Length: 272
Image 1 (cartoon, rainbow, N blue to C red):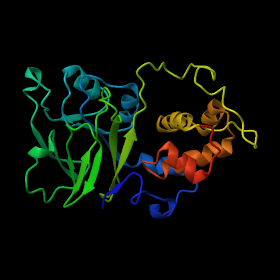
Image 2: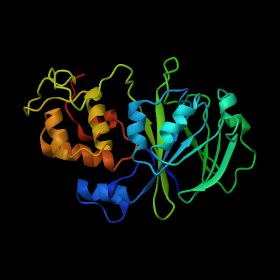
Image 3: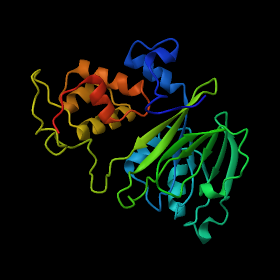
């Protein structure tokens, strides 16, 4: 049974069966999962954040409008790739199929670029993937339908998104939406000072800790995705390790939750 990232299908500690008692055990539980990175409409651009997310995946699916073979070449350096041809994929992409019908990580998957070209009968499939509109979409019918949106250059004011499908041993899967921060002019933050990372001007709350803005918390959650330790996260964002661990645990056990959701669930002080 599929479960999507945030909302009615969000996962809780209780739903894990033997509930993990620490961030470490949650990480161990997540490590046992198979992950499929799902992207579409990159239009010649691979963002650094997208690459970082895909490094944790054992398979990558691209739903078309790739625009250049260099994108596929880079993706293949990360994990095995299956891709379909989009309307913007010209002469170079003639060898790419228009549809994909495969079993991947135990899931029966059908993929096409434009959902208007989906076959009428999709019975027997677990997951149906398409792109083209640049708009993220999830819906359930005879199977689970997913449009990961576009994670290439931003189109108008549409969000930049992709998805990760997490598959458990018993075939249960959940779709985790990934909102990509616009990193057009961003420099790598690993070697940045607190001032340059936008952390130094945060006012402390009445506990003496710096209040977390939604933007800063989004950065913190990206560091969790990259596998940063609790202690390093606490030091980087100038918060207590106990709070850092609570944030990490909440994020890891609620796939798809965004910074806003973490702020609300933890009732963290906000400095917007």
